[in-house]
Length: 446
Image (cartoon, rainbow, N blue to C red; front, side, top):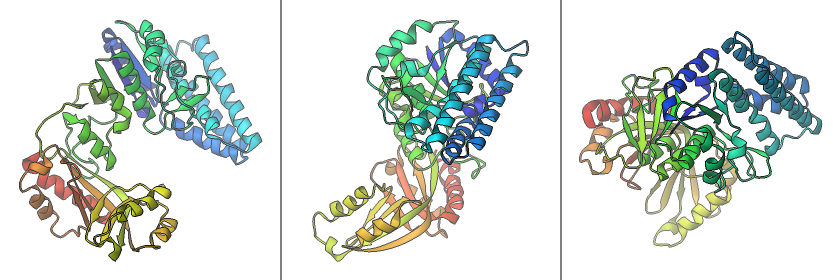
């Protein structure tokens, strides 16, 4: 069997759902499990409605609620012009009443707990899958009955009984000629409390279900023809990558590329199941396959960039020949829960990059008790990723030749063999990406 996951833009309206249904029917002989996200913009609308309710604006929250339900009823009517089945109409009515009660409860208490937010956020996937299942003639499965999680609302993690529950509740419904649909992003505690899996949750759900069921392929259908060599909005010559190693995908995702986040596909990688990234509107087009075993020997695979970031340069004469200084330094970052991306060291100083919105005030105050601190904001990281990057002679010369008149403020290479990262001013990042793509990828190293 296979897993086919479709994101919000792939099910944003009736036309898009028809295309998804056609893809599901074409794959019916492979016993597909269809994992759907909420329709585009629905989750944002649910968060906005919940926030308005918490602020006491119940009328505004219910206005968003009504618009959301009307839009989904409109999709159902468009897909089923002969008449919406009574069972689907009843399901939509029930979901509408549930959302109404949740929003009124939040407004009454003026409190939006993570538990309440998860219950509200789950409505998007439950609406989209009900409508799609009715149109496609698919079996509908409530993911919350299968995917049990811990009670960390907003970022729940699956419990180890998933394989057994999939074998009991999902596998018997799967088979050639049958389509089964369920939700991404949501689960439930063993006590039945609704949870969500956080950012990238629908991809994570697809990987979890695929790994638990022993799928032969996990297909992530989106709005691009796979993973590209660079952001196509910046580099018009960016091309899809046919094969991508898991480590390469991890590096690209960490530095801002629109790649499946590695954490979301880890279950599939651990089971040796390939994950393919495909374009929902171009099913015959190119796509990317991500596995742990890919060995292409490419010096350069792709470029990514992320910003804004801030660069902190921490200097102290005490660093010289003193053990424990770095431990003391990183203890400060740990206490303030600030993650560090890049690190570059000298004899008496350390430069580090942190996210642009990191709480620098209290962090720097603690650091200045034992060192001087310089701060540079408005910077960006540009990463060159490739399987044989470190072992390809002359590659750094090509890279820095391309950037000859761009001021590079920090360099990081060597923590692994597949990433060369530089820090530039944010306004120079796009130009740096264009030049590096031209010199390294269009120049023949990819």
